[in-house]
Length: 458
Image (cartoon, rainbow, N blue to C red):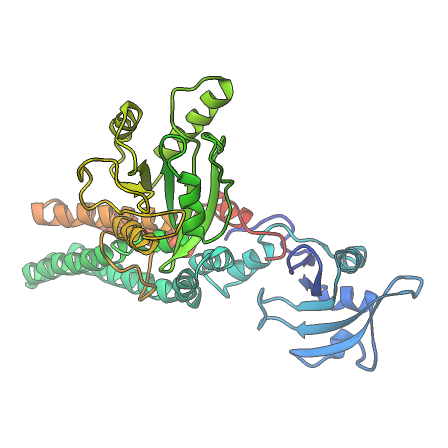
């Protein structure tokens, strides 16, 4: 069983965001939660925490040792095991000023608690069996979700929908393993041929379900991580204006002077429920000094990491050698040629980019068409919806792929007539791969890495 240093400690942390607010909350969890609270809290008429009714709220004051009142607070009491961590938990709600909420936390620490590590409350919920590892990761994902669709997708994982599907697949794999073991233990039975055929058919069915689950990974990744769209072009074609138009906000400085943008500017916008990271780059040209050389290098670096590249041209001017070099030099597989300044007469002479979006970033004309083109290119015309069970984590997708490959080996060995022990070992490997997602079979360093990504207080 995985253990970590300090798991018996009583821990405390501020669980509300940094900065000023109407309310600030300090959470305390562990065996001595009642003791910590009783040492710093004086209730109006509620007695000691050990006497409180479960899931009750109590009014009173946090006081210093000398008796000075620090803050007027409410304390919510949630004894284990029916709490977030399955331990005794108290949440102290005070005024939301940063100074006063830090004072309350400091008094909790002086009263015997220690400061919680990042994600330690959720780690305890996992280790105490309230949630599995996939659900614990969903806690972080729901905090960082940037669109409503992303929240809805993660809510299903937090509720346990993915875990239920994984447990079903696990039970099916164990059923196949049981069938193989029956064949190995009772080779004299007359049902060998029928049982062997059933084992292969069951493996094929599980592979189909694994493929269906893996097929949701691109959709899940888009909802979770979004897509990275880089805007590039030569100087003064309207890249920054296009960024502002897509954002519907004046984020980038726009002037008539070529080369205003000297660095990469990145902002996020919600397009049809998909988080889209828009990146405005410096104009790509032959650099005249070291600053422009670095700006061009960063622009090309951004293009290389993009999911989609918007290559912007000024359609009011004929193509020149710089345009042609730019078009030839950006061979990104997902490139959209954007013809800007459509409010001006065309200077291209003829439609050399038939079907390319024509926009006026200045007037914000054609933005909806461009947004649709970006989404179509990112999703391959498939609707990105938060329906059903989604795989939205690279770790989960890698483990599912490992389970699939192990099961394919098991099936191939069975069809080839290899010793059934080979198939049995591969099926066990497939089970272990699924268990790595839920945390039933996972390395300690993986657990530590996952929870280290959390903020303190969660």
